[in-house]
Amino acid sequence: MLSWVVKELNRVEPPAGAVAAAGTVAGRPGLFARIREGLADRRDPMFAGLGASGELSVARVRILLLCVLLAIQLVPGTAADIRLVTLPLNVVALIVAFLFHLVASRRPQPWLEGFASSAADVTLVSCSLAAFLLLDQPHTAVNNGTLFELYFLAIGCASLRYNPQACALTGLLAVAQYGTIVVYAAARWNLNDARYAPFKLGMFDWSTQGMRLILIGGAALVSALIVLRAQGLRQMSTTDLLSGAASRRAFDERLEAEASRARRNCRPLTVALIDVDNFKRVNDTRGHATGDAVLRAVAAIFLRALRPSDMVARFGGDEFALLLPETSAELVMDRLERLRAEVAAARIRPSGDRSGKPVQVTLSIGVANWPDDGPLMPLVLAAADARLYEAKRRGRDRIMGPAQHAGPREPNPPDAPHPSAPAPGAALPLTPRGPR
Image (cartoon, rainbow, N blue to C red; front, side, top):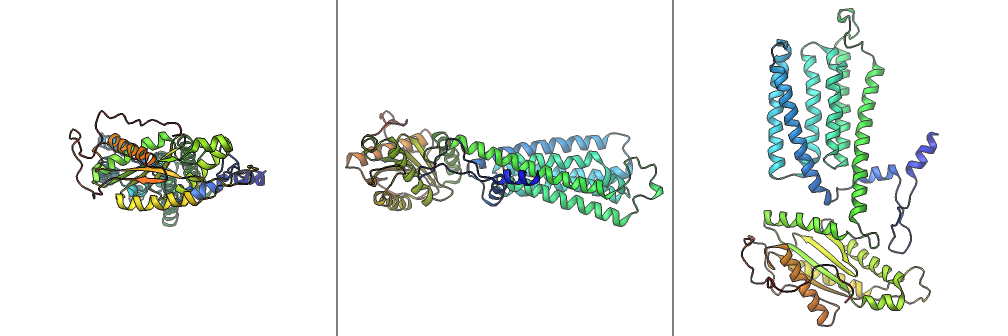
């Protein structure tokens, strides 16, 4: 039975509708392989915003819980010795929680989203348990069910950061810290001595503590799997199944996020719109299967050559869009020229095509840059679209970019027109179009 489960977890499953660039069905790795890949690779940039909002939510919940705990400790009737240790700890934790919230609300940082905040949550629970060791109450430290369950709350919060590495770190740190508390308590005190009778929290035994450590590790594994599953569903909803590039929806979301970041940091942002020249002729003469293979091949060339921070999306039909953050116009033009030449020289041989003749296509590309082509992204897209039309008007198989290349500068105010921006009333379609 166990061998069957392991085999099922590792088997390769083809996702429905996913098509590889060569025309075959793309395989999906098994569960263990996906876990290793998710823990080893960097997080997709699309999840940065989700992780930032999740971190802010965790920061607010953390402050709320600490305020409730502080109020409970201030209620008359709390033992003085317990209050002497736990009250300063709670105050320090509350100060740290406010600092985390301040940083998360102003400018989210990757290290905060993933690791420092997760470590702080787990360490807070461990310090609360260790405080009872200082009070000479070892049974409360190792058998306290209420405080121990807070580990699972910390692990659950880690999943809101949409970072599987953070989930794994939270679980490993919780196992290490709680295991240290248990080992120290067992070595320092005779926990089953008669003086601790009637053992209101139960007698100490290693099997129970071992099961607790296993439960913490299992919770961390489930948390990481939830994040990986969410990433997989997100990727399915934001990926064009035919070409493997991002979808139009994903491009619009990423464009909005990158535009905000570019304005905040005063860094350039470049957009390129790409058309496959005479694509309708390919469909009419070689069939739609060949046309699909052309789109996959073009997308594969761009996906292979671009940086992880860049994005290539299928804008609609035979049109693609590129998003290149923090890249000057000069570098973009040089890189796109190399890619244009690579596509023009490629010999695309669709699988299943019996003619034996390779297909060659060319690209027309229009490039625009923020802030040089306008203070708002609709103006930048309009400029790229107009230059794409100009490239096709001049004979196709070429790149049209900004007439002048300016470095990063302070963005124009939203109500101030930019001299190089298209006229506000110009009829420049921005919706997906058919072949031109």
